[in-house]
Amino acid sequence: MTKTKARIYREMLAGDDLIVSPGAYDGYSARLAEAAGYKTVATSGAAISNSRMGIADMGIMGLSENLDQCRAIVRAVSVPVTCDADTGYGNPVNVFHTVREFEAIGAVGINIEDQVSPKRCGHMPGKEVVGTAEMQKKIEAACLARSDDDFVIIARTDALAVEGIEGVERRVRAYVEAGADVIFVDAVNSEETIGRVVAASAVPVSVNMGFGIRSRPTTPLIPLPRLKQLGVRRISLPRMLPAAAIMGMRTALELMQQVVATGEPIDRPDLLVGIDEIMSLMDYDSARKLEAQLLTLEAFEAKYQKSH
View 1 (cartoon, rainbow, N blue to C red):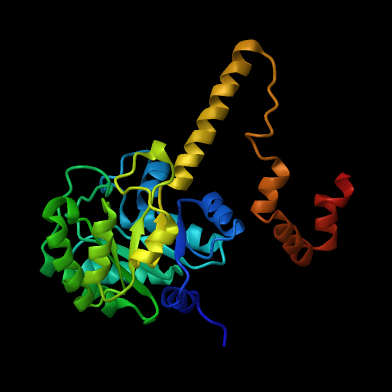
View 2 (tube, rainbow, N blue to C red; view 1 turned 180 degrees about the vertical axis):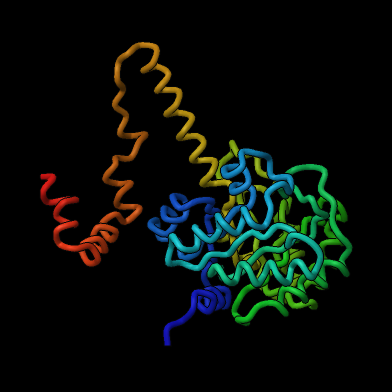
């Protein structure tokens, strides 16, 4: 029997290798992550909100917009994809239906966080969290809603900035008791904090990690072997791909301004991939093979052979 993506992801969580999940926000980023050899992808709610809507990640994006983008990302790759479901879009009843929706698009799991709605990016100031009992009910609702027990419920807490590490430890234990499969403490500020979270959790622990000094991360840059030594099972990289894309696009646009000003073309193959690479990434060959299979010979030849 072929394993489901959810089963594959469960086995990854149970294995020994550290899971490293780049944060995808569209088809390009998801396909690039898979092509680079990553075994799993995690959608970034902040990156989807920023790129799709052009606004700050402050709880403005709704369930429908998020689902629409995540559906395309899941469909674009063959690796397991976990999705960021923010606060679950309401109370425990809403969470129940949110889980059903994300499971239906083929995600292998979702993050649900304990921020007050409207939520905000975990590395922004001004966060508020709901009561522990309310979040426990959301986790219970999520577990009840899934039709496949392999679907992973990742309980995220943003309580560190509000209640300190002692409050986080209490919440971690309560969330595990409610049925969380993975604990994700956002904006962890030290190795000591990570160690205490791992010690308090009876399930795998996930943390976000930055990439490079310019990102000014809330969480310090910690070598992956050290994170594994601390007991972390999963690393997500939510800002890496959008930050790299913004840098690349900005550089290209600035160079194009020089072209506009001088009238002289600039050839920078070190900054721009060729059209052939884009077509390969998006698997245009498969699209053409499908046309050859499904179109009449006359229609196919009209499209391609007679044009040469």
